[in-house]
Each structure stands twice: as structure tokens, then as C-alpha cells.
Amino acid sequence: MRQMQWTVSLQRESDVDGEPLATFTRPVDGATVADFGLSLEEGRQLLQALQQVVVQSQIHAYDHARRHCRHCGAYRRIKDWRERVVATALGEVRVRVPRVVSCLCTPEPLDDDDMPMYRLAFTECPIQRLIPSRRTPELSYLCAKHGASHPYRVAADIVSEITGLRRPCHRTVRRDTLSCGQQLEDAQFMAGWYAGQTQRRGRAQRLRLAIDGTYLTAAPGEEVTKFEVVAGRVEREGGMGRRFACALPRRSMTRTLVAAALEQSGWAPQTEVEVMSDGAKGMRSLVASVAPTLSKPTLDWFHLSMKIHAVRRSLGAYQMAPTRRPAFMAASARSATKVRDHLWRGRTEEAIELTRNLIASLQAGAPALSSFYATVAETARGAATRLLDYVKQNRADIVDYNQARRNGQRISTAAAESVMNHVINRRMSKGQEMRWSISGAQCLLQTRVAMLDDRLVRHFHAQFPHFRSPEVQHV
Ligand SMILES: [Zn+2]
Image (cartoon, rainbow, N blue to C red; front, side, top):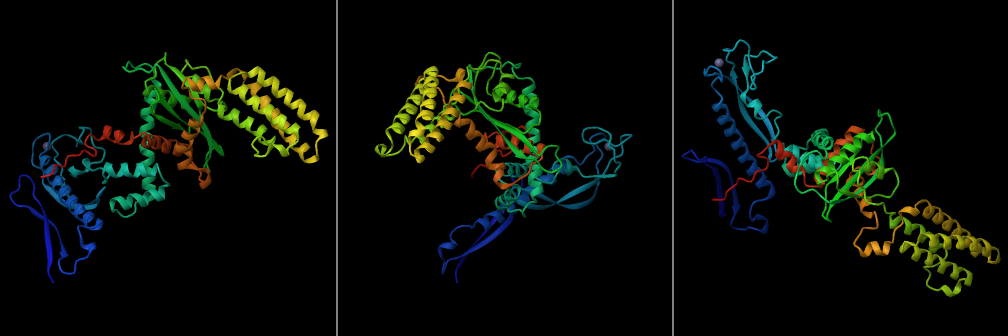
């Protein structure tokens, strides 16, 4: 039976000969479609073998460069070689690292930063500094990214699938996700404290801020049973802006993070901020405390229209055959439609007057109706009363929605609610009966918004300039 065989070898630039890396064979006779090319597993094994050789030769080079004492130049003898397992994004590699006999030329032993070493040791491992945690930042990145998207156990399975590593413990994924969030949060606090003080070009004239809040169940051991999380998104000139989220028990700290999000979107003290929220939970005053120049508030048409909808539905305004209803019900339904038209055009006083008349007429007309329609009229009267109260409470914030929409303004806070869904509910959903520590939720949310905004890679780049650098050149 004929077959083909390949040997892949690796040649370092300075070497004369290559070093065989792996071999694989394929049948020629009786080959099937499954024999074409390399399988995923073979590709993975090949990359792992390559990774092993590259890492080991880097360790030799690094050790060689540091073999002489930095202070007196004396040659430091190797005491022994230790086997180490390093976890990388291309699987686990087993390497040998040298331990060298320390030079005792300085009065007390100094570490790499020339600080006195607390632990007196006569041998040291020069490689320790290169791979302190024996795992690569790319692996931490994968754990943080998937830990921010899925429950930690699911994320551990995904990371294992991508890297070919044995399934990492979900606690490792959690630790990577939360420590990444902690670093991001620290950076946000720095930005928030100094918001508006840095001089940068490209200041925004107007920003739109969608903000909403919800409650999560606290883990046992927290001082509260539920805690508030706030999520939002800043939009600049219609473009998708920066998201933010906080699970902090104190509003003053939440303010700092909101300030950071505004600052990074180009906020300056004269920037006008349009707040999109449902008007509840004090979100507007929260924003006002960091951004003094707010646009005039607008009552959300979505919430207003839902209240009108309740009145019209109970009066049968949406039914296909209005002739079967008593004439009184049809007339009331027409009044409710007029109320909606007045509110849509911002004629609040007319709407209030008409709603009052509608309530009075439903009350007066009900006794003359059959018992079924009397109940319906009562339901409609209740809904109309709630609408009237809502309009009276918010009359200052009702605008001409028709005109506003023509001017291209946003009249509904559906955006704020979708931010909430995207940032919090999909990962921390109450349906999953999860309980959260406040600090855990806070750190997870920082990683999550960075992931959603594509800022996570940048964060790793800031710490490791060569992170994921594309340096492969095809020959
Ligand atoms: Zn020395």
C-alpha cells in the first residue's frame, strides 16, 4: 500500500541544520475525503511541538544572556535543571529551566530590581522573571474574555476547546476575569477623578447617555440581600460610544465611573449631555452631579404610549368589528384616540382636559350598559385615571413628539433598556438564580464592558507591548 510521508523541521536563523519537529503520513491507495490535509488535532499537535521548541530555545537564549553576574561579571555556575510546565494558548509545554548558583559579590543579595532579597537563597532561577506565573498573558486574555461572556464553568470548557489545554479550573477563569476587571476599574477611577481636567483635542459638543439600573441578588455574607447595578452607554454624534457598568454600593463611586465614561467619550464642562432614562431611580440626578449641562428632559414616549395603550385596549379600539360594540364604547374609544393625538403633538393641557371628560363620561355612562360592558368601562376608567396621574406628574417633560421625531431626536429610551440587556442581563441573568458578591459583580462588569467595546485587547497591549503581535512572515 503506497503512502506519503512528511517531516516538518524547524531551522533557527543562526543554525545550519534544521531540527525535525514532527512527521505525519497519508495513504495514497484507498484514500478518502477524510485523508485530505491535516485534521484539527494534528494541526494542534504540530503547533504544540513548535511552541515547545520555540519556548525552550528562548529559555536557553535568555539564560545565556544573563549567566554572568550583573555586578561583578563573574560566571554563575548552573546548579541543576528543573522541569517546568508552562500553559500557553497553544497548549501545555514542558520545558527545562536552569537554576544557577548565586554570586555573593554584593554585601547582601539583590534581586533584578537591585532591591535586597528577603529570602536568602544561594541559587536562583533567571527564568522566573520571564514567566513568573508559568502561563502566558494570551491565556489570561482568553479566560477573561470568555469569563465575561459565559458562566465561568462554560468559559473553562471553551478555553480548553480553543487551546487544547486540560480544562482549566473555573476558579482560574474567574480569577483572570476579575483581576482584569480590577485593573480596568483602577484605570477608570483615575480617569473619573480627573474628568474634565485633561486638555485634549476633539471635545464633543453634545453627548447622549443611555442609563438604566437593575438589582442583583447578593451572595451570602454580603451586608445586603440585593444590590443595584447601573449600566449605560455614551453615544457621540450618533456613533456607538463607550459602555459602562457599575455594581457599587455607593452612588458617589458610581458617579466617578460615569464621569470616566463621559470623559473618555470627549466630555468637557461645556458639553451638553442628553440623558435617556425612564425617569425613575434618580438616574438623571446621578448624571447631573457629574455633567452640569444637561439637555431639557423629555418624557419617554414609550412609557407614555403604554399607558394610553391600556385605555384604548380596554375600550376595544383595536377590535376589527366596532359595530358590535355599544355606540357609547365606540365614542369613548374615539376620545381615547384623540387623547393620544394631543399627547403625540405635545398639547398636554388639551389631553388632560379630554382625559378628565373621558373619566367622567365612563363613570356616568356605565350604569346604562349591560354588565359585561359596565365591567369593561370600569377597567377603562381605571386605566384612564392612571394615565391622567402620569401626565399630570410629568407634564413639564412632555414635548411635541411629532416635531421631535421630524428633527431626528430620539423619543424613546428603548436604547437604555437594550444596554441593560446587553451588558448585564445576558451574563448575570436573574433567571439563572445566580448570587453575586458586590466586588465580584463589579470586576466582572468592568471586563464585560471592555470586551463588548473591543477594549480588552488594548488593555493587554498596554501591559505587554508584544501581546498578540502579528510577526509571522510567510516564506
Ligand atoms: Zn557578582
